[in-house]
Length: 441
Image (tube, rainbow, N blue to C red):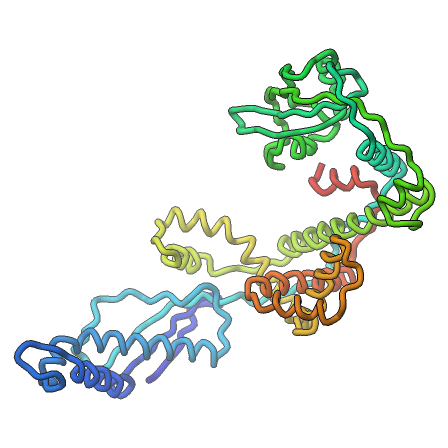
């Protein structure tokens, strides 16, 4: 057995695996001997078939199989021992048909090598770290929403300006069939709001989507269309009225406060606002952190320059799946995958440079915290440590869950590192402003 590597350039190499008879002959003989013991061929007793006949009938197939086993094991061991950082998998170099009557064989494999590069976390950038606040307008709107939510609905026969309507938005061409419940003041287009006045249950109101809301992203909530579809969406949708209600708002009193937050937790509207602000800004901070993580990632992909073995990767993509791809299809797939590959390489480099690792205790603690939060949502505020540990053990017995949770833990570690080392500016915004910043508008 002899394995050699020829460096074609910084990103490509050829590995040659030379296999001699000594590498496979014992294995071939053993397999053929086992075949002979069990062979059932007319005219011969079981186990008494001449080896020459076994060799003639099975020898070539066994030889191919055993040589391939030696080849794959040797190649994998070589890549591991030499610590070669490859992309994709080795591609066999197609040559003229192999002479399987020979005793010694040589096989070549193309390798695509990972590039060498550095990542500068302190480089100048335009990344912004957002501090998202719940402003007074939002808090007042939330208090009003609570009063309506816990108030009384009084069925009405026709729509008036301060009533709520329930029904369904539809548009056959776009496949829209979206139930919705709203007050008329949601519409930025006041003509649309007026078109509902006087309508009755069963009536259909045609609505133009262009300029319907003060923020096009609300189309995602009310029409259930994707973010990519909301921008410039200019279609006609029908709203079929199914219910009309006047809302008698609930009184913001201690009985309602106790119902919402627990007995005696809050005692005034101002304390309700403070509680809403606290809870909302925790969620806003999580969303702002995710945007910061995404923005730093995009910056690093843009600013960290390195070449990839593109020709090799495109060739590998052609044969990597169940069905072979054409060169044109592989080109398209590579274009889709290139950014993700660059991100994986950069992330791996950042992790290695900063010794970011996930320990079992990290994973266990993260899982336990998630479980506690989930249980708290269902009113279980003080679960025992034994109960938590039991659930953690069950969750971590699922490899798919372990993979997902590991990615979450590493994202948290990356976020912490970026906050520490990436120079960024801080900007305070309300939630509406943050949504516009998030979508680049």
